[in-house]
Length: 402
View 1 (tube, helix red, strand yellow):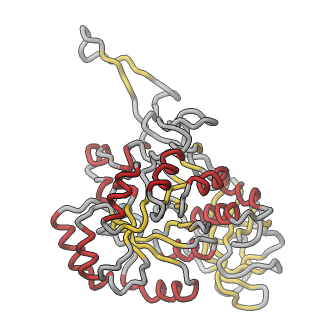
View 2: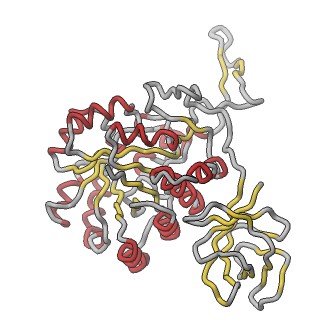
View 3: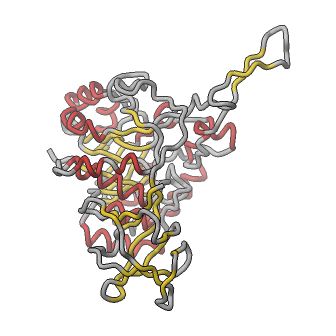
């Protein structure tokens, strides 16, 4: 059984990284209609390159129309449908059923529909109902266990099932959270979550007879993070997911960097393909910025990981490396333009990240300015060139150890 690997594409740069580093498909959205309105998203100016990437790679693109719509935004979606119709989408990820007749009216009755995880589908009867409505694929609620997935698959053999396998988890049921809207005036159900569950909180007890006198409950000096969930990581359990009947594996992270998209996609690609060196690529999952990992709900209810305990984490982001930038076009023999996001120096411990090669050190190089004069460091926002005899090419990435 062929399993599709989907990666996040918050903008054009991330789409390139996702497709080059091993995704079979990418999911992307437009700011007014996606659950990641701050991801950068796509505009009409990106359309020619998206079409070119689609034609070059033949890979699938799914449009996220997965927010919960009020009357004004539904009217705006209808207004924008002629523009959306120009895009080479293979399917649409939907949570609000009111979007379905609108898509069919503008794109035809055969438009491919995928049910968003935001719809919280976690049982076979709901899955059958959505299938009868015309949904080809169900992106299951993240609360579904492996046993749930098997039961849903057994009772709906013609239905595709998709699950998230890596990335941020939410403290609310399939993301249906009001905390951000309450505390920050930004609705997670409309794609503008402030991630209030990641904030640091102070807790206190107030004794009934002593109103106004608070007794603190403290962890880690002066704060606790009881609402903050661990990140999901299922790379060691892909066979179990496939055996349960999963058709597609999704990586979370449209708000995250191109570096994250590349190395996480590559790790899961190599693991799925059973590359003999896949465990070397797996190490990147611990180098990229992340919270403590868990297996979420897959092995039981209550978000308890059988190997790592509670899904709640008290730790900040873990990070061992810093993404420095891209190698861009070759301008002469052994000379390449750099697109830097962070500074690099000769004394840094630098590594090259490539789609189909294990990471290798960047050593014995020279940095040059726009006049091709040697410089001690390259910086973000400044034209910089790299001279190296190493086997690099456009699209490779540079990172440094922290």
